[in-house]
Image (cartoon, rainbow, N blue to C red; front, side, top):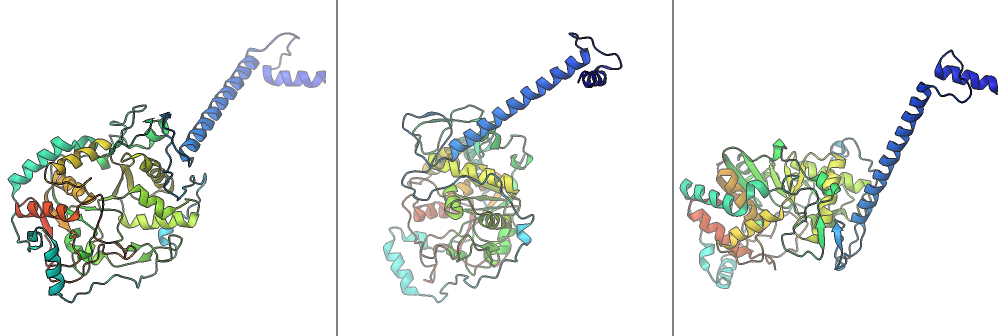
Length: 448
């Protein structure tokens, strides 16, 4: 044993053997380095355990107590019976799910009853307080002076340049979080996990252009677009803004979210190009359910890829119950490598744009995504073209108009407790008649 110790010492300290009770400087340095590495390793482990615990708190399905304050750990409302489980710790994703089994062609494309029905039109006319909303729109040249003034009003009243997105700059680490509808039952703060998910102000993709772009297409999802042939007109604009992740080339299967999306040709009427698309985080929860199936996650990524490299804009700070699913989808998109960049709106902009339209005749509880995107388009572009906005069950000729152009909500009707769609349509009509926007209703003949 003594000989073995001498060999060990000689390997450590050199050819000279150490006397009992002495210590080599090299050996002491090696011991110190090893102790430092062990300490750093323990600190990293403690940090990882803290982050795991923090994430677990945010993923728990529990109610927030009235007196709770501190970090963000939101839950679904007790009235929401769908329970959302936490994300799998390791999500195995196929390398290129978009080239996995080719989506089958859908044979469920919604079609309109194109036969004119004058009586249906007259019936609708008798139900409206203001029959002028059904008067056909005449082509009006753009009034660039009015557009310039309204653009400046949008900048001043909505703070759109600074607060269109929640970012690291306008949502500092540790700052209190505000929600648009003021439903805070407790105080929440921008904890590191949340703050790290927010985009940097230096993100070039999110920078505001130095000067207005030429043209924007704002595309609603109204059934009035069916068989319109407006796709090429929509795509000819510099920027295309869409609402609520609408199907363009792919649609969710009638067999459910577990089945692959099916190929559709709605793009002939609504276009393929997407620069900016909104979506409601509660809709994400309904679609993905428990977030436990790899197949379901791959299907969702495949569906999202039809929007290319668009900015996908959700609402983490609308009210509390939307914060958790919105944060989940942002984390998920980064983990799975979505083409699109998913960001959240800021509560200050949501409040500002709602107030902006309220000052201009809106009496509904909140502005629809259509009005929000119209304000964004007026701020971004010299010319704004709107498609797919028609809140009535029949068109000018009395032909049937479904609520949406796609099939999965065939039972959806033209009524909404939060939005007053005919009222909003009248606001858009006034903008058209004063040369601020062009509101396209019916078939498209030529590109703008």
